[in-house]
Amino acid sequence: MIDLKSIKLSECKDSKYIKISQMSYIENGKQKTWDIAQGLDSVSILIQNIDNNSIILVKQFRPAVYLRNNDGYMYELCAGLVDKKGKTLEQIAIEEVYEECGYKVKSLEQIAEFYSSVGTNGNKQNLFFAQVKNSDKIASGGGIDDEAIEIVEIPLMQIETILQKPNITPALGFAVMWFINRLKK
Image 1: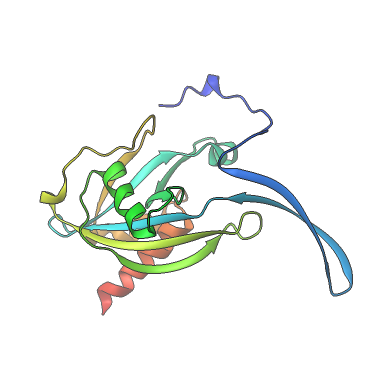
Image 2: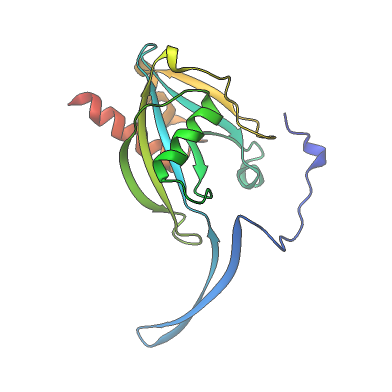
């Protein structure tokens, strides 16, 4: 739970996650400038529990969203930054499923690769799909270190309801639409 009285904003001087810069360029003969917040690429995983006939999501507090809606809690896919040297995207995704949701994943299917926050960030996101069983749950999940991640399981019969929530990420919306389309085949 967030102590709302503890919230303070300050200038970001040195970050290991983002680098602020400004690009200037000429387009169609006109000088232009654009502010950029370069961030790390990421992996996201849509997890289906085939025993429970459900999908597994995570819910966590996002400070930047809080500044916009005074809530900040978002429903998201299990995800993580591509910041582990020498590891493939698949290895990072498998680690994230274990850390955040507690499941041992045996295989992944890549759904898509796309750029997000293209107006300011342009980071690449790799989207995967994994199926798990109850017997694959080998840890409690919830994240590592001081992460506070809530695991949310949604029955497939109710999967479309997640699209009605205002506090979902575009990647989650895309993955759910992909999954619904897959079910129809």
